[in-house]
Image (cartoon, rainbow, N blue to C red; front, side):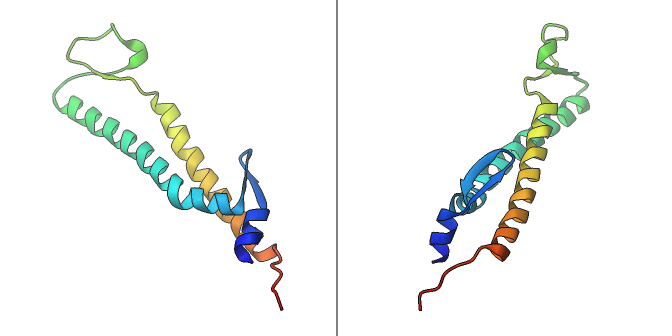
Length: 113
């Protein structure tokens, strides 16, 4: 009965509409992998930046290629966009948790007698 209600009840969050069942699967199975991937990329850039600085190399954005020395660290990821993606994911998860709590409190589940 609960599974049926979850499958038949939709939520729209940040312009994405899914059933509650699909959102629950996404939150459990997909979101942690996305979060880990984005965090790993951010951490790798930061570690590389720290190591390059220790060694006296410059860190150059990929859009500035050709302007530095061959020893410079070239970062071909838009770090601002990466930060926005991490923030958007966290915002989406926060909204999802709020909406799931609200739907849980307000969705009627018909019990068979």
